[in-house]
Amino acid sequence: MKHLAVFLLLLAAASSSASPQGSRWEVFTNVRVLIEDLVANLRSAADQAGTAIQTFENGLIQQGALVREKLLADLENLRIQVEANIQGVVDKLSVPGTVVMQCIDESRKNTDAVINLARSNAIACTDARITDISSQIEDLKNLTSFSTNFANAAIADMQECTANNSNNFLSLGVCLGTVALRAQVTGALLLTQSATSIGRLTLKMGTITTAMEICAGREVVTAGIAIGKIIVQIGTCSASSFYENMNNSTNTANNTTVS
Image (cartoon, rainbow, N blue to C red; front, side):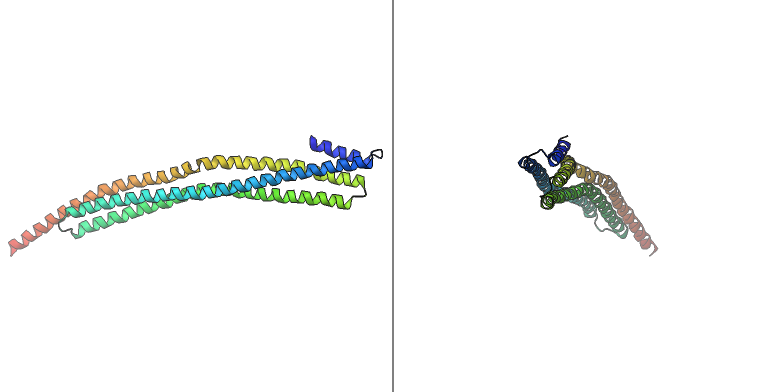
């Protein structure tokens, strides 16, 4: 336990009347160097975390945009496919009647509803994945900010110890020892937490694209199945047109006979 050893050494140096003054100041100087090294490590870790945070945020934005772009393209392709089937039915009809046009309009409305629902569900799912990682990034930001503030406070406390206790070796030793102890214990914890958070986020970022693609892909497949049923129903529009034309022909014939 290095920090405890330093603390006890400071107390021994400060309280020992036999210790030469130069030796005491040398010990205090070494402890200040220790505190400064701990602070430098914290600041370095904060800088690394800041770089990692920027990388995570940029990657999240880029991957989210790519997945959303692909989702919209896939759904638009489904819409085009249905419209092509609808147009194929219309092209085969010489004079589409009211019934068949109502059937076709209903198919278009159903298609729009399916695609809109798929888009809404997929975006909600991908946004949930993004929100989860964004929350972890925000936690890392808070941790980094706390580490920076703690490092600055440690330097300020060290300087205050020296300024307020320069004529009292015992007080100076206790003060610097307390700062060193706190800096080493808390600093080690912060460094561990920062490294762990960055590691977890790195793993998450490695799978976020796949997770979002699964979200989007599931909704596209679901929409595809529903639209497949709509395409089958479009065939009934043609049948409706056939029966409507037969009824019209029959009515025309009956009217002619009556006349």
